[in-house]
Image (cartoon, rainbow, N blue to C red; front, side, top):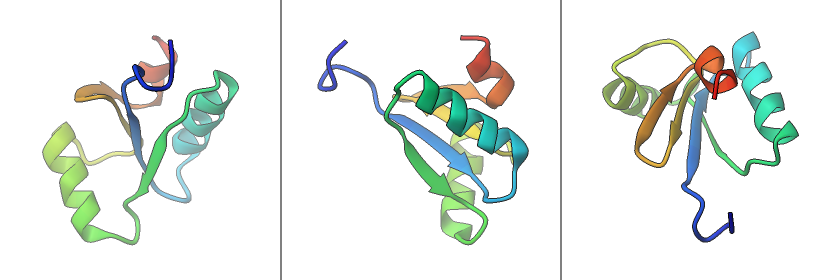
Length: 77
């Protein structure tokens, strides 16, 4: 799959979440380029994450507009 055709991966995280760290490591191991959105210091982005995912926990991962879920959901793909 070329970069141009690959859907954008967005991961909402905090700096101290162990599952966020695992998700980062998994994506890097698989060579996936992703955008990391830190929500621990940005209430606007936290509300965006909650609106998009209907969840308050991190990480929340999206591939394109599809909500994957958290780390366990990502690892199961």
